[in-house]
Image (cartoon, helix red, strand yellow):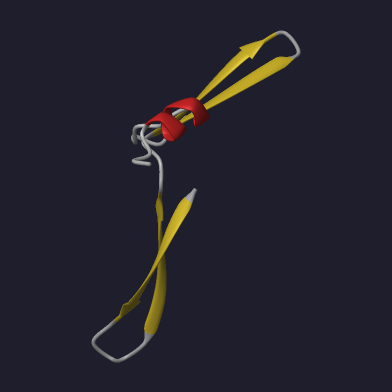
Length: 56
């Protein structure tokens, strides 16, 4: 859920920079149930749609 990038400053020191790999996270609480939804901002396909899109 994080993308890591290595950056080098002017003195030659390496720094790891982490940025989120998602658009948003939504939490819903309903009594004892917690529902978490992560929006990656990318189009997702079902397994059936993946198979149908293959050029065979």
